[in-house]
Image (cartoon, rainbow, N blue to C red; front, side, top):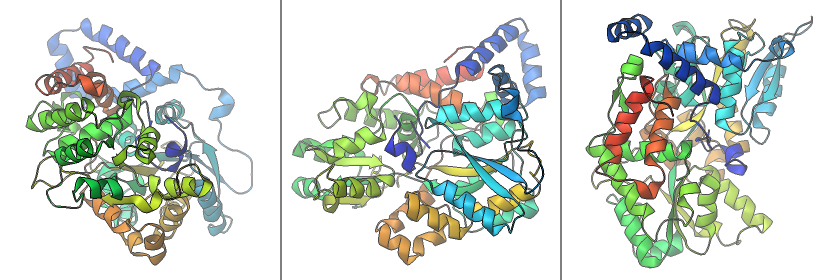
Length: 482
């Protein structure tokens, strides 16, 4: 999920860094822009209408310019038990264990072999795009960030689940996870684990400030005020990477708005960030970034820097993924942080932007998708995805890796509740979460927003939402490059 790598990248924060597009993609966009400039406006409009949202297919297939060796494209051959190749994001071994368990459960019908992708989510996307654009029949399964599903599906790179199969992957699953796995009315990935952010706070700081983060009227402004009164900090992710986009999107959604609507229209989608909700989000970003409550290194902070700030002498409040609970417990046990810190940590729902308006926490996670060109895409691959994403295995993975399950029923399990005392809050926060824009051009949208909203202290509520809306529109039309 995203962005600074290290423990956070391995333990399930969804916001991998660098969702800003690849060099190859930028060159492809530049070439398309040159070609388009030689066509009339009417020609471009007609082409867009005929193409629909097909521009992504061109962009992604252009990534084949970074050619793979022929040997890398070959599926595992030979006789014997069929092998399914599952490309996984880094964790602490949980997916490898599930691959072994599902291989054994198949009774010898298939064997799942895992291939580890890079830590960086953008590099993961590049690797998958190159293989899929080359029609690699050896890419059977992939662990896919939700924000990439629409892009890969729109390009024809993923095998959709027909209605007769989709039910087993969607029934009893968080609706937002199903929404993020769906494109153009079809399910293209099976939700594996979900993710959201909570408000973490130091009990000692809250007591000193005289506030209750669980109160119905607790807002970002009240949190910043409390931090200023107590000389503590509010930890967020302000680096120029996907984690910053996660924060911006959650603020906009919590204020009742959207960054993009009508995403199905492709590059004709409506850009909505220049709105009262966008200005409310910008006001909070600027207020925190220019206050003493901000991290001194806010503009380069990712999840782990936020956690370090929170665990430090001025720690007070922080928005971050649930992985930090297990991470802090482990660090306290190892003596990396004070042993008393975990007992001083409390949690609450993501802060409100305005009183009386429920917050919309971030959404992330991982979905398991089937490559469109695998030899076993309609048989063993489907069985493997069913096994991997079962309720039993989602529970096992959550206990082992700390990554929240995509099925609400898991949170009622006594073992889960014992290891995660905030399990109910995680479940409710995922249920209330707002996904980032579901569009085939997500990398362009995210990169454009980041470029205009960074650094956080430069954000101007009266100008930044408007300027970013214009820039996103221009990038989607190939009139500007990231």
